[in-house]
Each structure stands twice: as C-alpha cells, then as structure tokens.
Length: 328
Image (cartoon, rainbow, N blue to C red):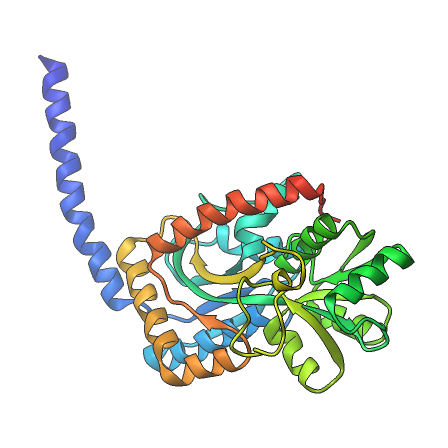
C-alpha cells in the first residue's frame, strides 16, 4: 500500500515539475539572448570556419542587440576548441562552428578524444559545404591530375600539407594516397594560415585546401589547381575539373561546417538559434557572399544535421581505417 502511495506521489510530483518546467524553458527562449554570446572557431583566422563564424556573429549581433564575440581556438584538428563548447554551460550562449573533422573524422583518427562527437553537443544547423581543391606550387611541372599522378609515381615520396590531423584536408590526402598508390607524407599544421606560406614557397608539394581559402590564390596565379574533390564541378570555379572525372571515379570528399552548442540546451533555445541561422543563410547578401568564394549555404534543421552527422561518421571512419591514417 505504502509503495503504491509513494509511486502515486512520485508521478504527481513529476507531472507538476514538467508543467512548471515547460513554461520556464519557453520564457527562457523568449528572453534569449539577454547577455553577450561567443562563437568558437576551431581554426586560425581566414579559413572557411572563421568566415562563417564572423558572418553569423555580425548578423546575430545586429538582429539581437547583444555582443557576439568570435574566439579562434586552433589545435589538435579542432579538438581543443570543440572541447571548450562541449564543457560549457547548457544555456546556448557558447556556440561552435563545428567541422567534418571535429564531428565526423576525429573520433576514428585520435586514440583518445576529449569529448564524444555526438553526445557532448546539441546540433543546431548545417551551415555550408564546400569541395576541397587540390592545389600545387607553380614550380610543380604537372599541368593536370594525370600528369601529377605520373610525376608522383616517378619521383617517389611527395609531401602534402593540411590544417591539422583529422581535418577534411588531411583525409582527402589520405584518400588520394590510397586510390593512386603515390607515396605521400602528411605534414600537419595548426591552421591553413601556417600551411599556405610553405606551399607557396615550395616546401611542401601539395594541399587539399578548402576552396574559399585557395581559390583567391588560384585566381591570382599564385597556386595551380589540379581538381576539386566534389562529385560535380563547383559553380564558383566551373573551369576546374573534378578529381573523379580525371581518372579516379568515386573520389569525393566534401568539407562541411555546422553550428553546435553545448549538450542539454533546451529545445526552444536551439529552435530560436536554428531559425536565426536559416534567416541569415537565406538572405541574398549572405548567400551571394558565400557562393562567390565557393561555399554553398545550407541551413538545415537540428534533426537533419544530426542525421547527416551519423552518415558522415560511418563514411569517414571507413576511410580512416582503410588508409591507416593516424593523428600526428
């Protein structure tokens, strides 16, 4: 009898708590944001994640009247910055421009992760996608991909730069190495800002850089593009053929960037953030700005991002395993 009374009391208490909590979450979302926010970018300034983070910060600050600060926290393939957000309060005030590396690749590449790629974050929206671009120093004699592959097999070891272990730039190189059989040594940097000078100076042979970072250098004639890693040519550079159409069918490695926040953030706040991201990305000005540099704006629901992340984890875990890649 006592157990039944206790059970009834527990049920009633839970019901009251639920009713009391729901309005408080709604009220919290209605007042959100009521203080400064920050957006963590896991790489150095100038790259695609930084461009997206600063675009969001500027528009959110203008729309909501609260300061939105961008903080660059590079290192460990993005793990350092992502871990900051994973361990932040569950209030939606700390956001992360996550990447395919921090949220789909690193779990397979690093022996020990400081966070769980799925459980330790609240997904908000897929922001944008972009192909990587295979770029080489102008001193490399190869003028197209087939000449480059032949050169690599003739000369032996080549070096390829990346903005860090676990990035899509890194695993694009590993996938290329697996499919061509070229002996290639990975040279990881703490960000593309450190890698590009060595590529321009000929100290590394090649790089699979994000298109927004390298396309301006290709247009200026400072680097040579040999192909893009998407299944179709990019509208931003339709004259550059895909790697797949140049003799490596099925080769595809698209970089993506998404907005996350810390785990356990109430759904009404996540929904408000997601709606703001949709508004920003669908604005003609922002959409054109991103497309001009090779970023394709997306703007998804939180649920769509979560589903996409699961498929990407499965895909890249296999690539890492097949290539034998390790974090360096």
